[in-house]
Length: 390
Image (cartoon, rainbow, N blue to C red):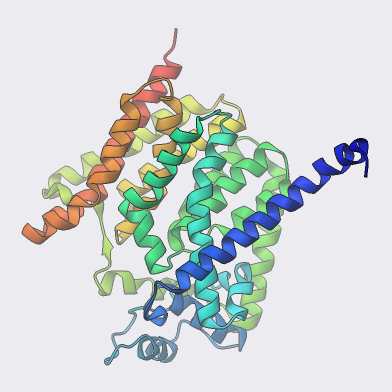
């Protein structure tokens, strides 16, 4: 083969080589993951795997009988209604179908490996989309800090949760909108609402696209989501009331928390909520004229912080969504030193809140208020610094 032939074939091979490398890396991370869990059936992934398998057999996964079976197989000796129930939209059965078809141990290992791979890849994807030619050493530091120094990323990985995947779907939708791949962007937005919080954040991005008159993309999204919904209804009947009822498990089993409660004074909650909503609307209004490549990550970061501060959270691992605002702060302050140090300090302090909670339990919850508030302050400063009216 001569040099000219190599020149012609090499560019065509690069995407396949990249895909092959990612698959190999995914397999290696799945193998590493499989050695970490002594009892993989006790993970948060199991109720969804079991419930989706039941649904594939035409059983309603929201029933208390299935809830009872899930708890027994997870090792619970008593039945606690609504604890570790299926609790997610039934459409997850179709959007993540390959994982439900695999045996559980293989499925959860592949899922854990995927979460770790996404945690490594997402900051690179964000910085590439923002066209930041980041020095390799700095990128490695940000990647490791986002994955291991930020307690919530590590926690989500160890629990085999779904937060990182949702964040990846939102970032993928941003990229696909920018390059005008409507079908793939619609599928990414269909895949994001696999948890109740994913529904909220996907809705925020869809609303942004509506304001920008992306009607074709919205019609495609509606068609895909409608098809998944219709298929799930045909399989188990109209499941929405059962899904809404299953969500009470977060409240009844004390795994749901309202960040404004940290204020400790009920009278402070309404002005706090109004202040957060006004802040979010003020920033989003200013971000309207930006092109998709910049508007979507800025506005999505604001939507994430508003969500984290104003709606009940299922444990503190939802703070993984705050990684996108943190990366936006780092990108916007790339010519400064202190933003990176401040973000690193925020990441490190997430490990202190559990220790403080051992002294005084309410201090543990400070994380769910202070982390998004501090990132919101940094985000606002960087936005005003770069977009102050002249």
